[in-house]
Image 1 (cartoon, rainbow, N blue to C red):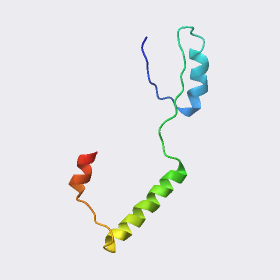
Image 2 (image 1 turned 90 degrees about the horizontal axis):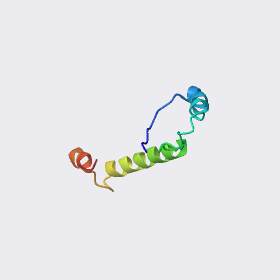
Image 3 (image 1 turned 90 degrees about the vertical axis):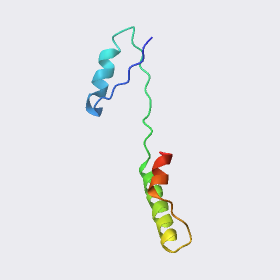
Image 4 (image 1 turned 120 degrees about the horizontal axis):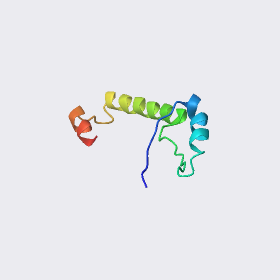
Length: 72
């Protein structure tokens, strides 16, 4: 069995699901995208600002950008 991942415009998603549900050999398994919620994004930004201020005040040490990029 093969698994195919498709990205479909939200406006056409229901049409596509209706279409492929007519094929007995196709199974639909929906998954959620790993996207942050608006609240999580806001919390991350607030945390970043807090850390930036602590670095500016000398209460926290920063690290070189190259070191950060190596982790990615």
